[in-house]
Image (cartoon, rainbow over the protein chains, first blue to last red):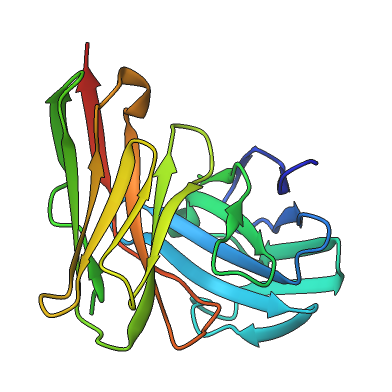
Length: 112
Length: 112
């Protein structure tokens, strides 16, 4: 079975542009998480969904960030407008009814 | 406020010896703990976990120890192999919450 799929793997964009990151969770998993990893702050939870419903978005840094999960097999994280401080690796993870989360390979975002 | 702390950013050991990675937590409500391993350019992968009702869990070369009174857990790898070289993250969950709180990671290098 395929793991969590993220696209693109790398994104380079200019400040002010809109960025959309995509995630396909593992089939049958009912929760989906978006994380951001930076050297300074480590792995931070941005938002998570349960059965496609956003449950906790307290980690979303500001209104420039938004996330959607229109169905059980797809989620997006959008940054508009992007800023250089948004440069990081963004991970998507999904989980079944257990504690373990399964991570995708990440999207490395660079905003110049 | 960092609730999960990995105070050693890096650790270097010789092949065949024991690797001990440490993790401290501050929130006494945490009741489930996990270790993840991360290779460069990949997402974290689940390694081993332990519930707060136990003080030890073993899986092959990997053993996790939990000391609730000290709010401390450790991951032992015996014997260490060069393929174990990776960043190891400690994570904690509380009260059935789906959220995981991660430490900043320890980079383990196993020298041949």
